[in-house]
Image (cartoon, rainbow, N blue to C red):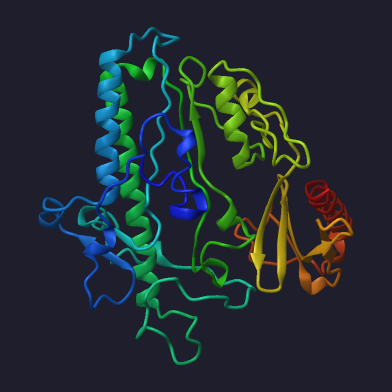
Length: 378
């Protein structure tokens, strides 16, 4: 229910084969609350309006609570198992644009606390303005650089939406406890991407920097994580699937071959269960991400300490048999490569690519990145 998948055609309307019951969406849209003369894509909704028409994520949360109640009435639970296993996924729209949430969560971030809304500068050139309606709030020097009041309002709205979703997640977890299902239910929480709020002079997602690629990833397994576990290990989003499979006691998943289009079930991730037993162990040496950029395909490798970004040109090369082969042309000039050292620069504000002290690091990371990309395209 909710926004588990990207909507409509990109997910074939929420991937129907994945569900045994019809996928649920609220008929409402939060954009309904935006005033027609609104400047910006943010709005705090008073309780009087919510009482008339609830917000989308509120509706999904209530539906999740109803389903959990129903499951508790038809499920016999013990400390380790259930007689009626179930899988339920709840997707929240927020903090996605437009940043609309109840007024009470905006109140948690008073405008007087100005330090909350400051953004550090960095070497990056301005890339884009926020993907919201900001007509009329641009500056004379550069329309991509927002004035302080607009920057403050956008960051405050995002923070408010985060607190709003945090509250909704809490409501679902409380219902899980009330029904007794928490004793035998694995719970995972994660997001699909991060978000820039002016950091690196960027607004939104679709970058190869830390704030766009790093996401929350949490998992609770009764009897195993009760005391709380935090691991510094580098992991990837694709690791959640095999982790849940192993945690649920199902058959391990086979690793996907290079060309897996015809394989009915496989995984590109690895189970993180070893980290739940030994949090300081390293399950893999790096995480990889990519985006489509205006100047090519942008790839990144992230280790425990460094991030390297490199842009390449990618082509579909026609073959004699009528098929196509993907070809990657790496652009070796230094202006197409970036390097960051998280030991001293967690915000990735200083590009070290021209620092000779990191020459060996750059060579190693480029070799590993190229090898990984080549393994994907065969």
